Amino acid sequence: MGNKKDINLLPEELRYSSSRFAGKRKNDNAVKEVSDSVKGLMDIITSKVSSIQYEKSKRMVSDLSKGFKSNLVGSLQQESSKPSGFFHSLKKVKLRNLEQILNVSKKDLIVSSKVNYVYCTDLGKVIVVDKGPDGIPKTVTIKTSDSVTIKSVKFNNDNPFLYPKFNENDLPKDIIYMDEEEIWYIGDNEAILLLFKNDNLEYLKINLNEVKLNRNSKALLNYLECYKILHQDKRLSNLLLEERKITLDNIIRLRPHYALYKENNKSYRVLLFDKAKNISNEFSIQELPNVNAEAWDVLFSNEIYEYVKSNGYSFDNFRQANDHIEYWQNIGSNKVCVLRCKI
Image (tube, rainbow, N blue to C red; front, side, top):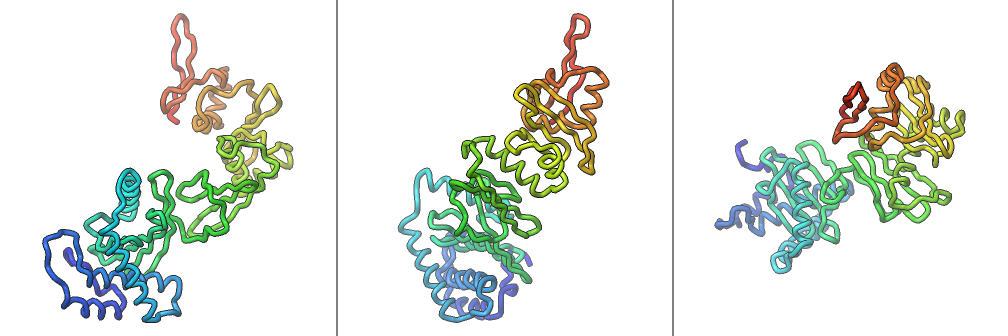
């Protein structure tokens, strides 16, 4: 196939459009510049890709014409009103990061307008990045020879995440957390967690009327995380909330293999679980170990507990050294590290 874009992967009517415009092309010296006729062709591609997903039954020529005119006008306007300054630089960083996860680069870019970017790879894949009103990428449409996929784009700072397409109209405006599989929205009295798994979407609504936590605090993030885990794991939910009568507010950290919660005003309780979510070990501590929360996930395991117990050590004496946790003990006149684990 070489470096040629495979136009034969496009729908038949678009191939006809390609031959219709081909006679009008002119050569110039710009490496990435395309003629208005090619832009017109790719605008038709953009409109066609969108119509396949959203309006399969609507293939009106007038719709294609409107999309062609809108994008062509946007392309022309961009030349006279390019954004500049710091915000423009941020948008470029976001776009480059998005290109990286889409496995495309500037050499694949064939249309850049106010409304979208269109890429066509050497393998014939067409990728349309549609912008929001602020010029930031909002959706991505990926068309191959046999499929069309539409993804929503979200940025955490400048890092892009792609999710199955969803409607944000009824969601709160503020996002307090996101990763590859989740987005957490928060409003005045409610949090809505969007949980994506195998392209399936679950809306988890959490009432915050009786939760007295700062909306931007780590405590609130922990509360929502614990709520989500207990929602997904009924065995843990019954064990902690029903049998142990532990309130969600008192849970310090919860993971599949352990739970750490306030036992009273003076001590904390640690429950260690086996693979079946049965309690395999439990103990109280007076102070939280002087390591970060991620280190607790290593420290509070059955293997570490058995080692600590058999040697008469104390969890209070663990310290953190960069990405390791260490236990130091006085042996004679020397202080020796007797246990070291990578976090």
